[in-house]
Length: 103
Image 1 (cartoon, one colour):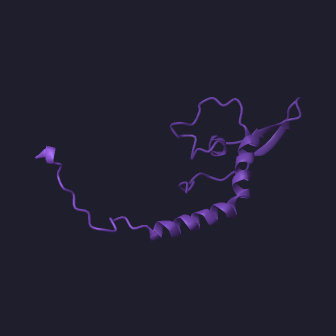
Image 2 (tube, helix red, strand yellow):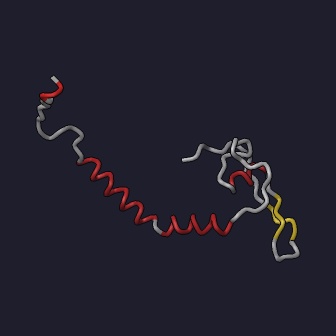
Image 3 (cartoon, one colour):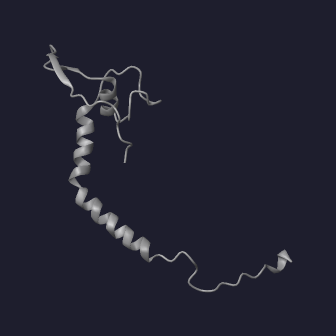
């Protein structure tokens, strides 16, 4: 789970349209960072120059995960049950004898 965001919440605002049937948005650096998956614009990996943000690709990935949420929950439950039944010690006594050549 990501750390809580202590920044002021603002809403992105549509401020105009482009010639290519797109929109111009007003967004803070923090909002752009969050949109790209960073905690803040001060993250070391946050790109200094952004040309294109693939919103459709990000939405498709989130939608794909949301559509299999039930399957993921069932797999998690099954894996936890299996993990609970594992015995991490040897189920029988093993006596290790040194090889005759090692003596």
